[in-house]
Image 1: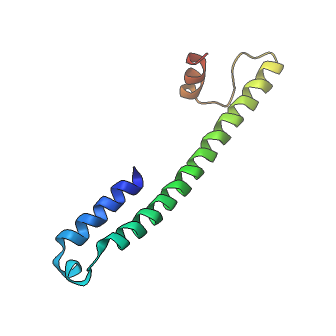
Image 2: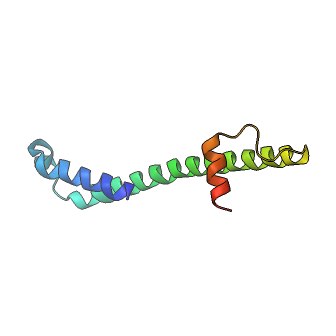
Image 3: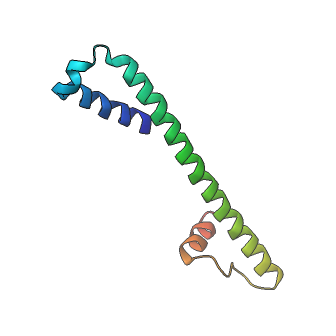
Length: 90
């Protein structure tokens, strides 16, 4: 979706901008290049986001496990919103 939106935006730019339209004879090659680059950037961004979410979940699990081993009921350092989300999914 990110790549498609970026490619469509680029298509609109090269179609409606007269100075660019005069210099581009076959826009399909540029559109393919823009799609590939935007797809790669989107994948890299989502990869970083995924790793961050996995790290947060792992830290939550470690915190909850440590607190339960000490006799507590819930994670000590987790935000209340995360605790509610995890509790509601059980």
